[in-house]
Image 1: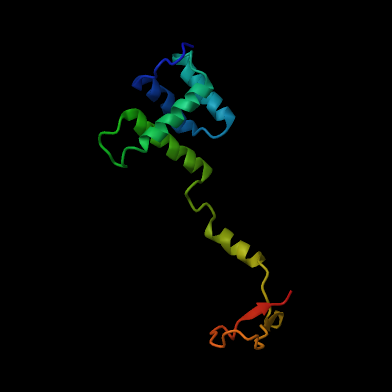
Image 2: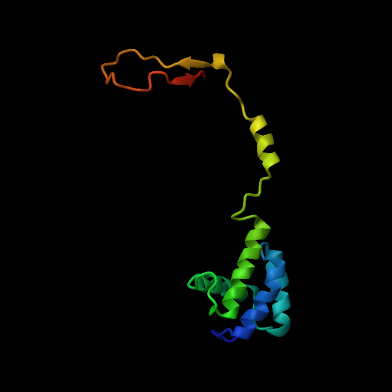
Length: 139
């Protein structure tokens, strides 16, 4: 591959379209999307594609969401980024409500007789403490 050959808008879009469906997470995903891209652009390896994708995502952050003038490749990079996030459940509450309820049933509960009052003996400190009724669990 010639060093430093620039990526065209057409090549960026060609690389990104399959990535939306594949949502590259694992190395095999990168290989699959790389193989598809190399059918048309055989001189690009997986590392070059990964670097280009990361650069496009970084560059897309300079454009506000909903910008009608965002270049097509940057808009596609955002779509790929969202597809990857959805596949990994990033930024989403991926625990169902019943799962949270099940987890709370497994948490230990303190019985009333497991709690003892804190010793409030006069230690020469400030007597204006409003936390005289605090209790601490027994060990």
